[in-house]
Image 1 (tube, rainbow, N blue to C red):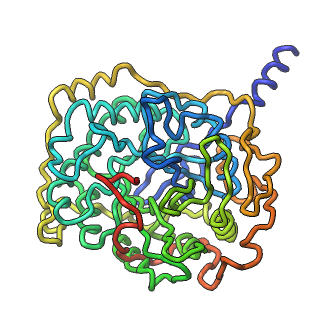
Image 2 (cartoon, rainbow, N blue to C red; image 1 turned 90 degrees about the horizontal axis):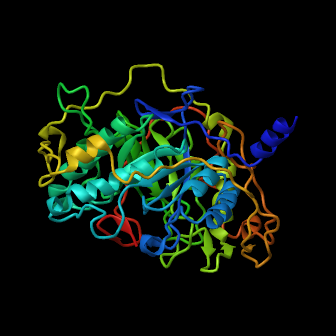
Image 3 (cartoon, rainbow, N blue to C red; image 1 turned 45 degrees about the vertical axis):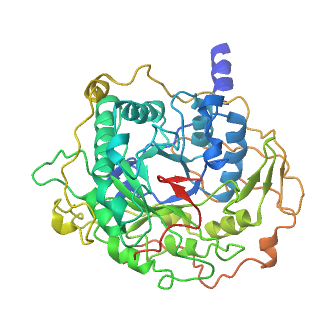
Length: 480
């Protein structure tokens, strides 16, 4: 009896685990149900590049009290995935990973950072591809591979942004993809997909896509091709539509993809307040046959004005009107139908064979000979990084948020806490709610619904090349 009581008490704080997902053909699949998984995500990089300070002992997933606050609010949003850009493998992420896991959220993680020696340069790229750089990327994999909610790794983010960078960068990003996949195959208990997050620059987008998804002829075990392809696209602004936004061109361009396609960033703010009418289309029948959802940019307010929540240095936070506007659009989706779609029963799309004929843009790399591993890297790859970071789910003592959180009208959000989910559950609208105060989206001041139709289960035709970069600056592929 005493043992049973102790186990029950312990169980109250243990985080149940989401189901690790798999890639099958061009879809993310829940292996238990066989259902496709649609990413409904938010970019999570508090403080931008300045929020990554490993020398001071913190990154976005190292401060549990901050993660608890944000996971609770993300549950209210209805999201099931976060994207985190800059992470230090030398810090402990167990509590934050456990919090987001219990909240029913997966993590898509970049292995690079803005610091010197922690990313590929988009000029003289060969100078940044060396053993200590690879050791660092492998260490990120080690730190996160054992969390069940680690969904995928990005080997690069917008390193290719024009034809000059497209001439030199692709072989090195493909090599990093190869190296990460080989490391995962040797040191992880499960496969974790690796892919690239591309700038939606139409001059190079589809050449980039073809360069990374093709297979070397006759090599069934080619590790260098991407397992997925994502893009940062801001072509839907204001109350747009499927064609005006050129989303139709993207669907057409990716319709024969052999790997999952999704938006790694979206949410144009050229028209404010944002109304997020693209949500109904991204998760509607025109796109779900080709796309696996997307990640809205971004959770925390920065100078570029994309935030859903304004977080202060003291940990207090203010919900912004865009938060409720996005939540309301996500809530309109038919989530049961959306997350229970089955892959089509017909033949799977085949990856093209790598060939110069795949590349249509003059000046873009069309040689698929990749750089060999730098000196010392083969030994690191085989033996594993040392010291080896180890990540694991841990007990969470309390789910209650301790920071003060306010609504747009200044009213306090009361009794905010994470609602832990059961095993194999993911977050969806209604899991968590808050008192909204005088929510401006209730008045209709920010919401036109003419383009926002609830998603209907089914497989659409889909596609179109998007516009250039979003309305914020990048240095070597990192958001500022």
